Amino acid sequence: MKAIAVMSEAELAAYVQQHLLKRGIRVVLSGGTCVTIFSKSAYVSGDLDLVAEVYARPKEVAAALAEIGFERKGRVYKHPESGLLVDIMSPPLAVGGEPVKQVWELQLPTGTLRMLSPTDCVKDRLANYYYFNDRQGLEQACLVVAFVEVDLAEVGRWSVQEGQEAKFADIRQRLCEAESARRHR
Amino acid sequence: MVETIPMLAPLLGSQDLEKALMYLLCLDEGYPRQMARFSGSTLSALQKQLDRLESAGVVYSQLLGRTRLYRFNPRYPFLKELKALLEKALTFYPEAERRALLMSRQRPRRAGKPL
Image 1 (cartoon, chains in turn purple, blue):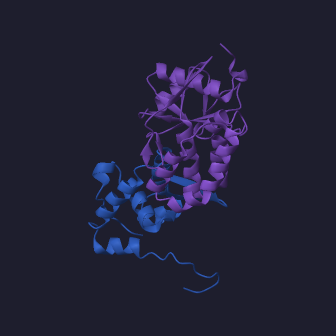
Image 2: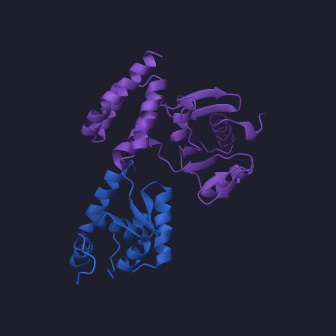
Image 3: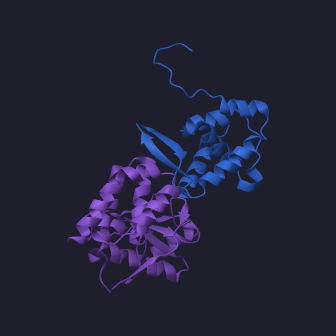
């Protein structure tokens, strides 16, 4: 087994997930680290947002993570050998008002990483842009589209469902340009 | 101070939780001390409920100077339904309490202007 100090974000997330699963706690990687993985580190997040699929008591989560050396620091967990922060978030696993229907799996040396699909990752980032005017969220969404295949028609459907048709119309061209860049790479 | 009559406390398990949710429903945002003063809860009790709501993703907070401001999290997937439940419960509040929540001044007041 690789030392925690040299694990990538994805490897550490898979390692933590596998351990939590042994304790009956199922989590899925969400947030900026999905962008890191899809964009091959063109964007670096620095923390692992793991969303619990079913509610787990904070005490149980803390005890399970302590078994692999993580200490609680406020609301997040930190390992002395890693600079990455782990945040265990409450269910439901959702993008905006919709549940995540399919979880992506990636086989890694440290275990199976369960994470948002590229399309759900783009929705997740755009939700920050839509609801908090977070420009970084839009840039991250474009970055994912520029690296991996994303179902933009589904992103459009979801945006309308979220009541964000006008904002989606504003950014559609940027997403299409990012998609075009990926095709010509 | 508004001493609200709890309508959802048996369901939510806490009067302070109901007060925090109702405050945010009616006034959109608030900081703990202001919310506690308005609703007659203790600061620590209200803070505990806000922490709980933030951990669950129901609300989010932002630091404005030294003040932590809380709002409903627009990304919370059950927000629409939660607000509908709170709106319904609000119609059961006594008129005085309902008015105090709904008629609290939100528009700006120029600095130095007397009341």
